[in-house]
Length: 359
Image (cartoon, rainbow, N blue to C red; front, top):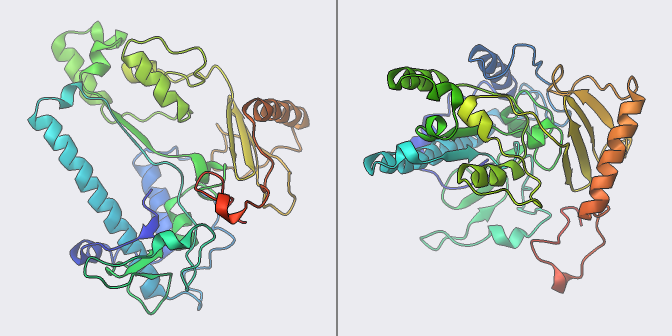
């Protein structure tokens, strides 16, 4: 997601969105949740999580509403420009008669980003990478300074926790966490001809006209089968007709594309990021937060009934917690998960791969 950071965007693009966000993050969250249900993107039973505890109400006197609305407008403009760029790629594929045979996969890498640049531009990981000059040679002013216009060419800002909370509707938490707000991302796959010709049993049995009609019907079909990033590699092997290497832990979701079958996972899914841990087994998910007051306390959720993780069932199913904790611990030992926080790293040895965010 283009949440880090807000950089220069054509003003006419920003102007399109200024009014839209003037109602504030609380109202936009409500509107988005309602629209997701109305468009059947999520089931009506998905309750929207409460506003994040560190997000003030939009009407709070501490909120500079005009400036905050401008920040979100810049972010929306960035997404809009990205979308247009993707559109140009797709149009080129159409013009060169490659679109029907091209499998396109589009996803965001994580949930909304609550990382925040301070007013003076300080951030805990390599602030020097955010400095520099504009094309005209002016120094770039780094930081969320409210007397600066977001989106101007000589500024570099972030859009902040409250808008990240809004972006993640209806989920909790953000990038870096392994609750759904950090790891649940939209994933769009387009593969017009391949979805019929590479194993779509149901479609193959129909006449050409019937298959085309069925394909159009399925064009906007939504599925909620859980999958993990490693599955993409396994799927590419599968659709290319290459045997999936035994050491590859991902699972092909090709049957989901060709026959629209729900994906039945063969193995648990595991996560760890900056000490935040989770394991999902079937409909159950066990998760914890390193920075929670009760550190190392695990939460248990039924993803089928409570996808937004609002009802912790750990106390009602202690045996399931123990079972899933053991699964996670075995995985962590096997792949070499390190305890968090990591030990301080000498300055001359620091690089992008080994720097903890809270050193």
